[in-house]
Amino acid sequence: QVQLVESGGGLVQPGGSLRLSCVASGSIFGGNPGDNRVDWYRQAPGKQREWVARIFNVGVTRYADSVKGRFTTSIDNAENTVYLQMNSLKPEDTAVYYCKFPFGSWGQGTQVTVSS
Image (cartoon, rainbow, N blue to C red; front, side, top):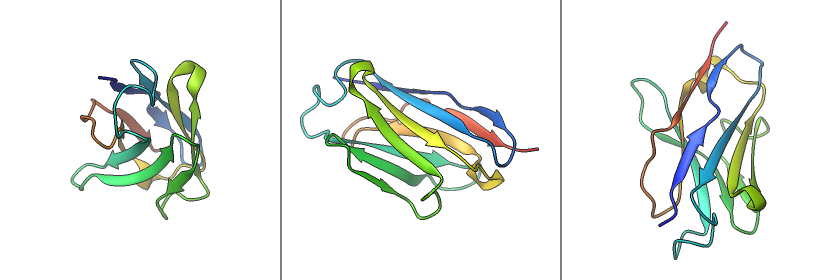
């Protein structure tokens, strides 16, 4: 079964940018029946996990209202990687970010901290 691993988090000032990577252990949409998309989620301290963005295997994307216009998700099939480009970051974007197949398991996530 194809697994996803997140990376790329860090500390950034408000208004800055980060690019998160979600690397698949195999062909990103070729391994798991029914897993035709990758979702990004985040969980801030003391809050419930929330959905952030989605990319389908055909490249169609969807975004939560809170990140629309600031975040962009994309696929590099050659690298078996999904990216989340985060621009104009705000302190309220501080959270652990996860990527996940619909029927996949949760990974360790990657911490994003937006602070001056």
